[in-house]
Length: 385
Image 1 (cartoon, one colour):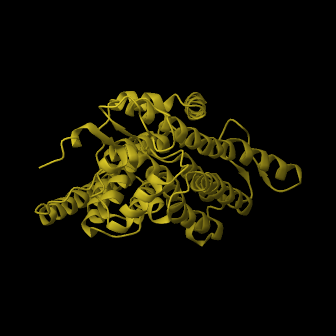
Image 2 (cartoon, rainbow, N blue to C red):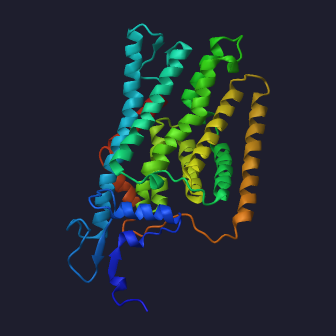
Image 3 (cartoon, helix red, strand yellow):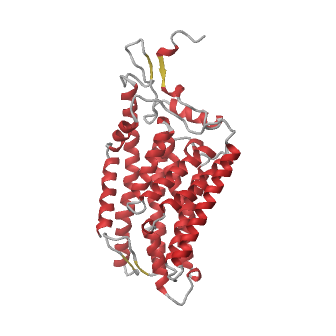
């Protein structure tokens, strides 16, 4: 029999569903949540029959709802600061650096109202690589230092279910095809490809070292760095409030930080698939693989588009159809193999706050709200111009 007072006790940490990962991960996550003086842990305890509520750090909250909102406010203040660093580095510091280099006589130029960079190929690629690394690594390091999550929690690395990776890759094929309209191509990728194509019409693209360096970086390094930020510390700290909430907020943030309405659908949906793949497989490298596939797919479409032959339209459609068919077949095969497994992969969290209430509260937290407004302004400017 259960103790008579069991239903009167509320312990948020103990009631969380930890069955989706391995024991080592769970132990580290619980220890982090119970750590003293951890302002980013949702740790609420109370006895419903008593009038005194104890949070473990003093008499701070009067109810689970208030405690949850307070913790979310602290967390999204930090996430907002990290996103602000991302936006400032990309839109201000990067452009200021280009202007400074131009004034020093280096062959590189741009303006604040376009993503296009002009100048020498080596100069353009070098600046893109440096700015891209800085805008992702600095915010990631900031989240890491502030949240102080254990490494195994911040970056999942245990392959619990290889089928989860296969399923996520198949879903990424389907997702990419579903949203790959002509307007979904990456602005930056399109511009860099056109630049190198027009640089010397007598030289094949793959003979240009700068072009190859950019493509390798864009296809392999960028997905890895971006996933360290979104599926790393940001996702891990939001798991306390359920995986569904963490998936929605990380995907929304990733899509908005692109600051391009044409890329919003593909980034949002790919982020959802990446989160699903990471949770099911147990490793962040599944999320990286999903993002690499999305990058490679969009790169292939752009390459087909700039080919400029009379068969381009047919070739592109056949390519898209082939990717879609492969995705569906892989997903069905994996589903048939794994359907007998009786394991769930997503941690649930029961809250008195409804999902819309929780999301609404988070997007109002400053400076996260300011970052959203800045991103929306950039989206509008790029649409108009």
